[in-house]
Length: 521
Image 1: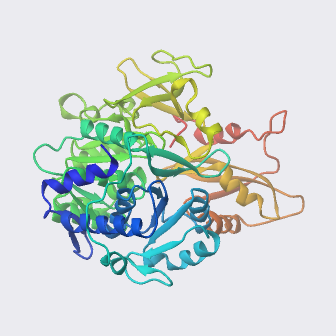
Image 2 (image 1 turned 120 degrees about the horizontal axis):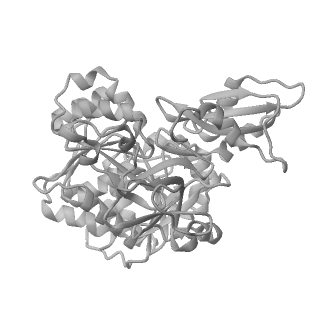
């Protein structure tokens, strides 16, 4: 099946059922209405000269029409370039330019960013404002009104590119993970195997951004004829209220948001019994927090592990795996596991020479699955490195126990996972090093109760120079956004270095991770 076929399959089940509801405004879209928007959008793109394989993107908060636009891009046989509205403008400009995007749908909330994009990404030749006429952009509904909602064949096959999902890189430059109709079919296969909604279609609350994991889950829900309830932000009171009012059965949040939710008074003030699956992922969760979740929500917790390059779940810790004998919680060790392989994925632990290791031996977690990317866009060197020895290399160091559960204990790549978002150290370091007072620096992840890992900068200043940590944090927020900016800055006389002058980040991290069983948050 093709990517767009899964949405059409859900729409065919009950065309007049609601597929999207904006929780704050009550605005509702049926499958019939949303599908019509996707058809008109796809036909408008074709008439406008956009052909199979060209690239398009959507810059929008959680919005039903924005989601329809990305489906319209795929329906036209084009490639959807996924961009995060939380990114700094510089990063999105880089992504749009280097991944050769030619059409951009955007929400008026990003009008200021569009001004910068127009100047810096001249290859974009069509701007469409999804919620009205923009500054020099055609309004979506006006643009598509001229085009019929005729059926259109995307013209793509199983191995054709349909999605470019951006990821960081060891050079600090975003890479594009290339996903095909086949790899997305692998994603759906594992999702259908892991999540069971036989009796009634799921009702999914999308409070987390649908540009990332939340969006994939929305696609899975729509494929079953389910309903996606959209919220503009993760607010514990709004989340709990929606669960009760909308009878939400499916929820996903990254661990940081889960921690905020279980600490909020609202969890005791609302009926949350409709939940069947409360999914978490993108970063590990502290066992004590998981136990609290199980006390509050019951046996509905499920962890899904995957990556931009592999999609998810390639492993999962099921609802049953979270429980212990007599209906209690599993032991602490089991709660630190990322689970066992999903039905359509094979995993292993590999050493540096490509040898698969036995139970209990530590090495890199490697994956074979249909859902694994075809490679990195126009980056054969990194593709070869990621696919060495015929397996996808996750960059996570871990082991498998005798029961087949996998555990992540460290990170091979120089990456920090904070609040469910990937931050590449070198990208932050480049910004810090641009300050005239900074001689050198090292950015590391340190344990943090809220974020899992917090971005922490260790800075060596030039002789006789001084700068406040707050100034360096503000510089990073301006250049790369608040998610990637350090939460703290530490000044040091001399950074520890190896004999060849390489900064020894492990030595810096060791001070903070002592007493922790794993070196990931």
